[in-house]
Length: 231
Ligand SMILES: [Mg+2]
Image (cartoon, rainbow, N blue to C red; front, top):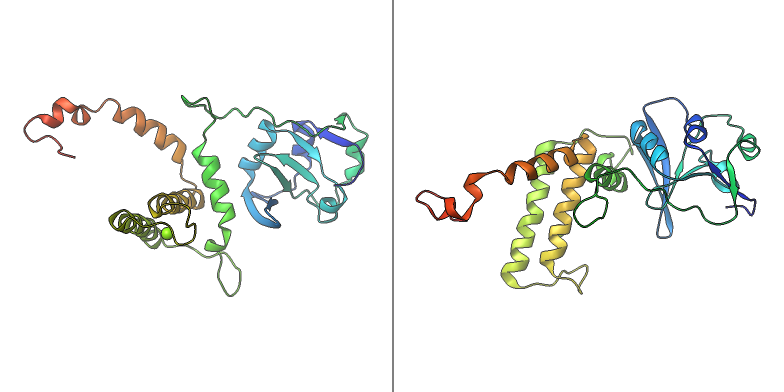
């Protein structure tokens, strides 16, 4: 980012920088590389409304990704063609020399007090695993087979079983148990699937948790009774 004064944008200003279309290209920094991904426009608009946005510096303007949205780290968002970035520097946005604070998001909070939005997490995991959804030779998007992806989820659970059965540590992360890492693999696969197919995982999770709390067949009394679930 350049040494020019930082320009914090209003949500209206940031939204006005987007081009047309239902998807928006983004870059995110991951360790020492940039990961590019196409995001659903509605999700980007939600981030813009919930998070701090600022005008990017010369490098990201040069590739026309001069809108920076601070959503779990800076997300460099593609802007409409021919955008006059400098016009925003003299507009009504505030100017700060200190790093922007991340805005409080409006996503639900759980008993821990921490925000948790499985749909947001699924979209991010899917974006980070974008190559799983592209042809290995052409780089073009491919239609993934649901059954194949579901098999990959339960193959991670099977790997977890073997880890527990043999008391193994993980071979890639040898300081961690295979049990924990394979469950993480399964979660990554599940979130990628939900993000890739646009499932409302958050809504289903909340409603199923609430429903399970009402189930009589899950009570100890019912399970002790004749015909109750033994495990
Ligand atoms: Mg695995």
